[in-house]
Image (cartoon, rainbow, N blue to C red):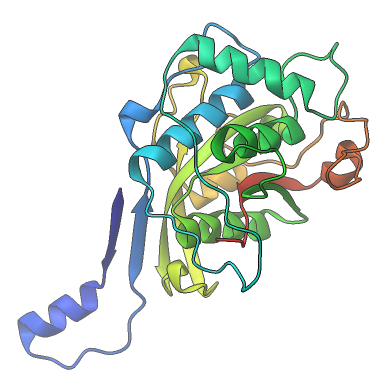
Length: 260
């Protein structure tokens, strides 16, 4: 895991013996680990299942996440139970489970946002109601981008995003920002870019640095675009919402919640 910050003006001030003016530092964090990743191929429908596997592997190998804000008298914090794996069998087992716990008809291929959320909680913490990961939707790209960065910063856990207008699962493992350190909870920063991994081998996006502008309006395979999938038609048993109504036209992420 990389976690650094750079303040060039401060360095120059020391070198030249000058008093530095206030500057905005740059903070870079990346949770990526190559040995945590397998591509979903040969199953072209398993992006959410492979996303679950990759995210939980990354948490296993590199996260410093700890439950530190559980309120008094609350139920015990969930225990992380996932054991790292890269097997195709495990991926397909996750996909089968997701398809039995999602909000879209089984005649549709793959799994939806709810299935991905549920699998992360079930395979990671033993229950689909563990509440560690949740589906979150935002009206604007900027709001979703900030939420993605803050989720990573505050929990040391990756964030899943719904790319390709909601048709494909991708993973954000890190960021570069200038301004306040997002690990403090501040949102007073500018996002320079993020680190993106795509489960599809042929896309060749493995721990790729994507600039903010590329992420916002670049090629469709790296662009974080609004969700326009109409196949999640059932009422979700956890939150009582219908997915296509909840997510339609919004920017959707599957990220760690404020419990941590």
